[in-house]
Length: 362
Image 1 (tube, rainbow, N blue to C red):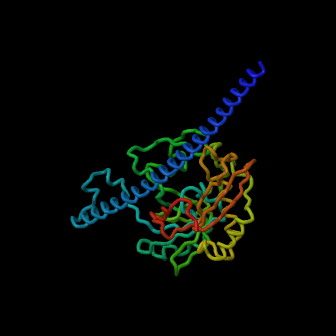
Image 2 (image 1 turned 30 degrees about the vertical axis):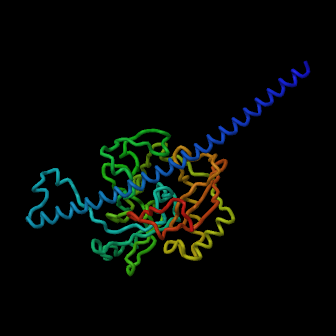
């Protein structure tokens, strides 16, 4: 009888061991498959975005050729396009680029949704003097702020044949509203309006220096207009500015800290002018504050925004020629765990946006 129990126990133990081994094996295989699918998904997404950007560049080139050919034809014939194409053509307008934005925001991710949320962010507009000579900026240094009318050149939905009339703003909790009731870059005309601070004019280099900006590097500028008191709602009549609750909510992360090594790396990068000309060797504090302001707005995907991230891998976002690595902890605390120079020597730039290998660091 005792031998029978011993045999039964041995069988049970063997079965349990086989089950554990089998479970461990399948768990390992599941992990391998999951990791492989994750890599494939990320690669597919990066490839799709790159293809969309290249497509946008091709469309832009073809449009420029079409406009040039059209202008040449009408100049030769001595007539306007409106005379030939009817009243609808009268409503169209060909805009010329007066300048191009140089900013630390080389990609859409990490660009502040409003410039005032990152007052230490710096940039400048390199004037296209063949369209707008430096004399057009004479006297603008007497103003503190300006409106920038620009093109949302980094949109990657140019292949879409239909326009979305409604969008889901990232901070609206899933609410759908009309595209013109938002500041979304996806609009009938991809034109944007941004408020910036004027910090200086360099006539020799043909630059208008600005701060508190939310413009991606390479953004084409169509016009620059100084801000006057009449632009400020309530400045004279006391009327209160009204906005939806999802616009006015303060959802900034509570604190941004730097790991000791990350702060030391930033100091070294600043010292060796890796963020020049926007941040000089004496601008360490301003560069650090700009990074804190950007990360406090939580540049992660909308579904993860404001929450602790369960992943052990840090998020990455570009700032000038550097790449920041950060994690989000409990109670909205952010820690910058790494800063390094990006390897952009072999990068292909489309409209000021680098198409380098993701995560490539020097």
